[in-house]
Length: 275
Length: 336
Image 1 (cartoon, rainbow over the protein chains, first blue to last red):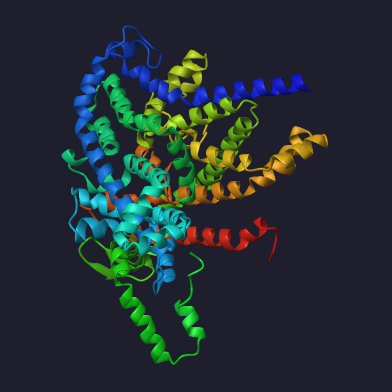
Image 2: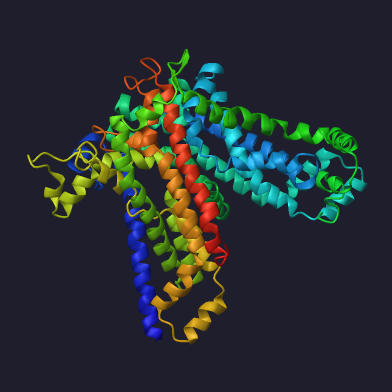
């Protein structure tokens, strides 16, 4: 029985490692090619060749740095906006009673069930035509704030409701107003859940493609996801440089992952509830 | 906080048999007292009304019009008639009939299998590290993954090179001996699109299943083991039934995501060659964004695009309602 168990364990590990290695093939191909010169690519498309050629990264950096700066800017504004909006609204819904509260909340909640696809075409008309926000960062930020806050409010309301009422009561006795209750009491107690929401928002904003593609058509405004497809289609960089661009585009999320591994993993697992 | 709740909530006021006018005044007074709260949630509601609800309503309206970007003409159900006639859309339904079942099966089966293997590892450290390892591909942006897969599929690309290296080079050549362009060939394009992401270990789904498996009470498993249950028996009678909720969650959200998604198709093939990889949402994008298909510059078909959006919306809402109303009772022990 014992031996049987150990055999099963070994087979499991072998299968898991194999699946992991196959999953990583595209990533490995990206890395290997990013160190190749053009003649080296000619010799072998996907297998390593020596010497390694780091020059690709210098060229790639020049190509993508603008996109990276744009994306980081948008991500920062997006995540700060979503955190501010969602935490204030969730605080109001979690800790106060007022007429129409549940109706208003169900208006919010319904958005989690309404598929975004129906608003796709009209959103283009609304944002680009009526508001004239093409090539304007607000054209992506407004929809990010609007859509990104909904799930966050849902999660935060539940969390804020779990905070002990006695603390709020005591603070109110001491004459604390809304601002104190929110800023000095609720937020400091909510670090972990806020960081899960922040990471979720950072990942989705960093990866978003279609909407920035539509709104930010101007070269100098492009985000990294849009910029990479544009580079490949129009500037035709050397294969090695192209792959180096992809590696550079992956580094910020990799650093975020390393720095916040537990929260990161928790974040993407909870993100699935958002349908 | 429950202790103080509902004392003068509107619903309890109603029960107190006071005249309607007085009740209304009480509510208005309460609203006036809460004005600071309304102000605090105003930005949230302004944003969702403008950027989420307005487009939904506009979508319904435009779907009954011919809209060229300047003027909207009411044309009744004409756009909806086109939904059944448009050649690209008709092909897209056939493609969706393949993509949808495939994506859902793969999105459930592979992550469940991986989660199952990890869950049964004896050492806690191993479980932790495999969980981390399978999460790592998440850090590569989706677009980058797609662009790498495009390279894999080019005639001089990674897939053909790999086939060559393992002695299966003939698979990478067409009948006339040319290197195959997997995404450019009518015959292989759809299969190539489906194969993207192989072996499809979705980190999100895997983590959900793992959480589900870890929530199974240990006593339950131990009791069954003491009774001499085989691993297959354990899986079939305990573990699988305990993650049915997760399977449904992933299947339903997955179906909803696949039906309205088109980002991968847009990047990989644009729906081509011909309409070999066309999906409905991609066609919707085409009607407003792609020059020649009714793009902003040429003959825009925003009404038609909206009608596609509304149709997808309706199909997805039906699935959502079925999921909430019909399937839920099964989970809670079959109460009907």
